[in-house]
Image: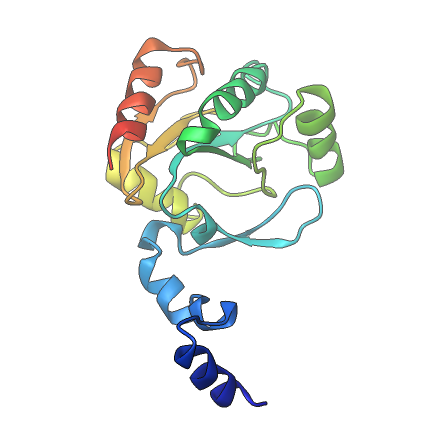
Length: 190
């Protein structure tokens, strides 16, 4: 039986096959906010990951570094991710060597993130986050918030609609009342 016959037969019985309800590439792209229409390689295996998979989530986008005085923030970021994941928060980590505190070897970066700090949130490969060479994601975050990363562990809060809400600098830790309040508000918004 071909797909058309199967579809017509299913309609007669009042049910559609799973493939008939699957989103098309065009519908997925249309529902994905422009800010998220980027693909990055995953840190642990360098497999491409489309950020559109996080559409409808509240995102905390963080530029990270393995050899920075703020590297301990990984633990707090992982705790945030675990605490709020069920409500729709996803922390996204972007190692960057822009401030000369990230290893050129992605395996060493992965070791620090996953083994030393127990990071489970998505991490991506080395990304330019500031200046003229900044990846378009970070260029747009800087434009929308008026703040480009001045150092490692800058945090950008992005709403479920894919629009940047706030920027928090390196000195703002993951347990900051101000940032937690902004995350709670973003999670409550529909």
